[in-house]
Image 1 (cartoon, rainbow, N blue to C red):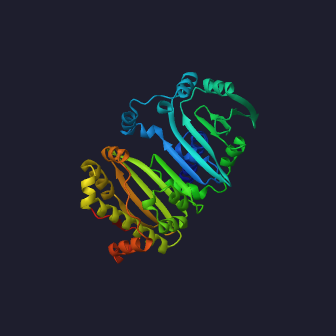
Image 2: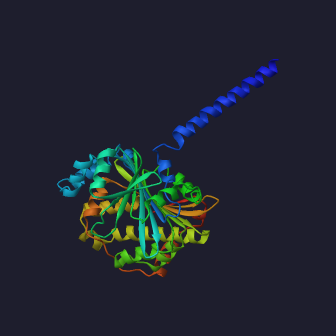
Image 3: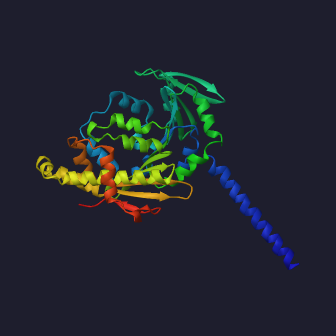
Length: 370
């Protein structure tokens, strides 16, 4: 009898726990306006994803620093009108936004999801006034009149706290694509690694980022070797997180093999050492403002390069700390140029500072502090 009561009590406890779990999943899991649900609702065929958590960033010193930076700037007249008609101001009401960039041949398209405090009636009235609308799958899709660039933008409320918008031809198809399970696993795995970052960009490599950076880099710092290494990377992430009054930035590239990981780590350390050496050059010391030079010294001294081996893949991570003082000086300084160094010379410089003990997985290879 005692055993039967124990079994019955156990079954009741299991049933109760299961009921609580499924109720929680039903009411909170699928419908929550959370970071996870926002990222999970993006199309899995995206080339890149950009994420910003404004709600978290508002709790830091960043808004105050931005306010000081923008002091005296005029507010765009069209934006003032938009705020007046919709009651929505992104600095106050936007909680988080995720933007998926899709590379479709000759041009890129974007699809975005935003969570926030929306006055739905006012915003929908504004969208009707400035475009037209249709109903697809029971969902109202608003199409705004094309702007100066000739791109039409569509928008739709997914809930009172979430809105979708983008410039693709079929917004409803983009929304439905995010609901499908296929293809999300590889994105989700990397989103989880970035869970502690209120802002990040995650790029699935298409073998073009190296060439893109090379075309936009100042002539003195272009490097065919860096382009070649970047084009081998499988994924690239850039994440930022407030750290005290400063801002910690972490860049990570997933490598196809150990050789690429080692070469990229050595190359990045070589560049850092060269920059530190250049800042100590007597001629440059005389030309540079002392405060500006100190800002660059602090920036390069904060750099740490790490080689990571997660078992399933190998990566190189570069972390640096940007303080308000450093940012103020660097942003207002003139662009530093240096003689172009050939890849072979850069590799030799890097190899001089490399050590076999730094080839271990997960070993930090900090730049030398001056």
